[in-house]
Length: 164
Image (cartoon, rainbow, N blue to C red; front, side, top):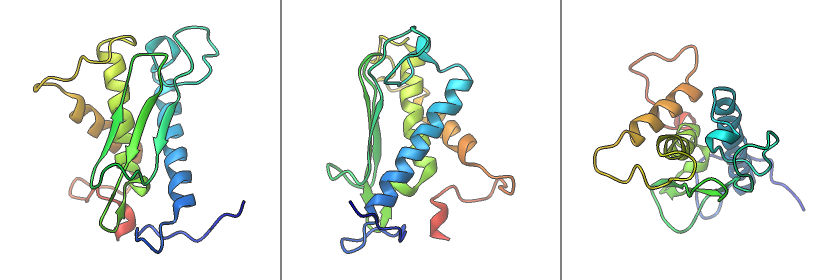
């Protein structure tokens, strides 16, 4: 197996930087897991984890994160079944933008899994499917908190930082 170590965040049919997209998505999904674990989204809370070392909660439910998913475009989503079943994060491309390189969007999508499992409890995954719920706002908060830098100010754009 060979790896392309040239990174180009601008997606095109001739230059997809697939290895880099997969690596970045894997890295940020794990960062979101590890940080939220430290703040209480652990095995007994229904976190997404293949092996539950504490013996609490159900294991076998890692996040299946899909970089450059072809089933949609110009969006991203996170499907969160009950504890013991894997969540699925689908990151799409949109014109020349690749969601797998937008760390804010990655963490935002992971945030949906957190809010679904914490709001209804680990075994109830349909609690946030009404018109008046906070899932989007909570996910925005996670995305902002985990990707902000010391030099950010309120007027800064939160779009993909690779665009500048």
